[in-house]
Length: 263
Image 1 (cartoon, rainbow, N blue to C red):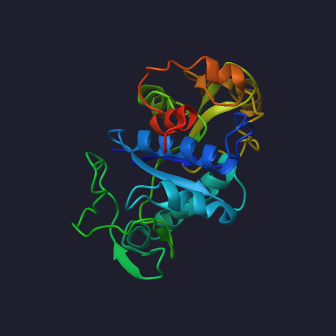
Image 2 (tube, helix red, strand yellow):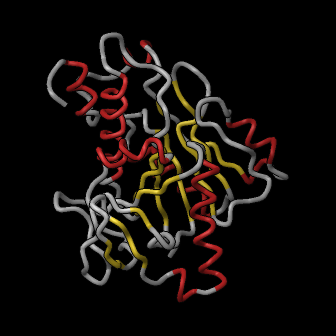
């Protein structure tokens, strides 16, 4: 069975509603997306940030959620980090699929095993396969604690995206090399992108704010290698905000901030 991970890329946001402090807005969006990922079944979840934005990951992650620091907030940077672990596992399976050291925010370290695939979401956080508790806000120090076969990277400004939409992003990877989910509503770009590891060499540089599905398909030797899946809105302007269902599921932190209640 393929090991799959969905990574929330906590990149900069392009719009903030008037009267709301940008850092609080960004934190609310990220919190809602991370909370959604925690409800997904049959996948593992993680977040990715630049070193400059590590504060944001520490503010929103669940205990034990892997945090990958990347040099730039792009899907390609996330793929590169996880592909390195995949390649190490291919060269030395005992190293790649063994235990990894993780560091907590207070500087203490522990050793944990790979996370299980099913049924890990819960109020007390995640638990390693061998029963040892993973460290809150931990980052892999000598390599990721798990090696994945399929990776999806999603934008962190879609607070009400349905889990089913994210599941559809991974589903085509049984027969396709890459899948992309477009943005609905205003603006260009992608909701997310998924790929098998190792990532194909023809995959172009991706920007979730500007890349269109057609660009990815044109880069592939065979356009059929790229699946275009269901899209969703990102919160990038007044029209996107107006399109939200006030009573819809999800986006609790964002909705609380907009209503003036403490997030």
